Image (cartoon, rainbow, N blue to C red; front, side, top):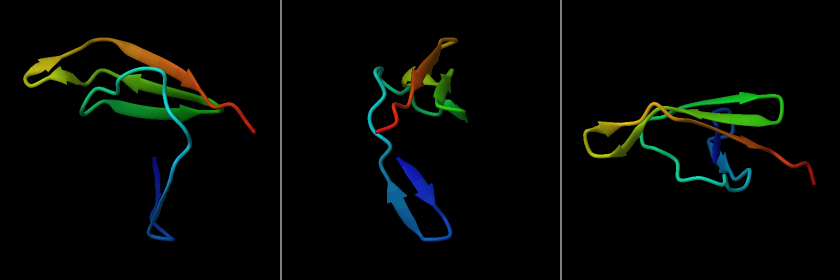
Length: 57
């Protein structure tokens, strides 16, 4: 989901192929989404980084 603050609305860009950790840093570069670190359960953080890509329709 992407929030557009100027329109005060949410937009879905699809689904990522992994469970998104809570509090992860998300980065969009070109057509790639990176999920960096985050909590995988309460109090347990992960050092993993995931990458997904956006397919244009």
